[in-house]
Length: 280
Image (tube, rainbow, N blue to C red; front, side):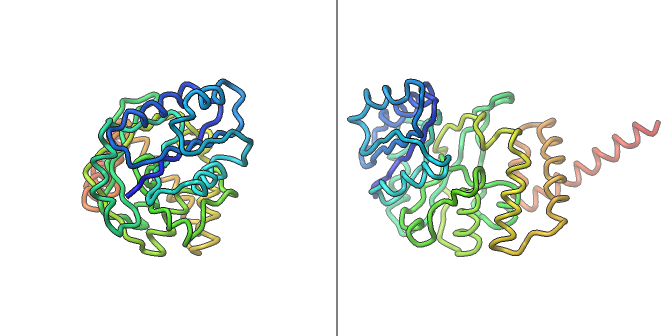
């Protein structure tokens, strides 16, 4: 199966070169690299020109945001599976595509592995995704694009990324195809990519916009939103803050229902102790 690696970029020439070199170092050969630049005003265009023989397609022109650029890449892709490796992110090892290939020679719609998170202001760690995905998982998080191989025909059947959403369109796509359409998927025991924190998807500045876009998706398509959802988000954010105080990876186990119950009991006990101390 052929893989289409799609990289989008805007004014991140250093990150772009890091990503390009990472792809070039792969031992596998059955892939293509597509680069979509949003009309950068730094040296990105010159860098693209210097590496142009390594791309099956590249362009530099204004777009309407991240998901518009990703959709442009989808339209140019000729591979069976797509991997979105955006500017700055890198593949975990130079043989990771070779290791993934055997899992792609199937009819699976989505194949995903783990993601190495390179922290901006916290220790780096491997984000290990669960093997079972359901609404309870997507209630808290989403699959990482750089760790997920998506069969191209999914976009033909279920549509491309919504461009009216600025932050959560990938989450909305995964929620639809996995939870509503029940497409096939498989978790593989491989770390796929290195993801550098600091972009729009991980910025605290966009927390409110993210919440509003999630609300829009749930109201428009699932009729699942009610006033309790605001309280749920607030509760999850509070728990996440406590998890990070203990260890940044503890929050990852909240997708496991048994471990979640244990962790919730621990949090309740911790809260009880804190209340007692304050009352003294």
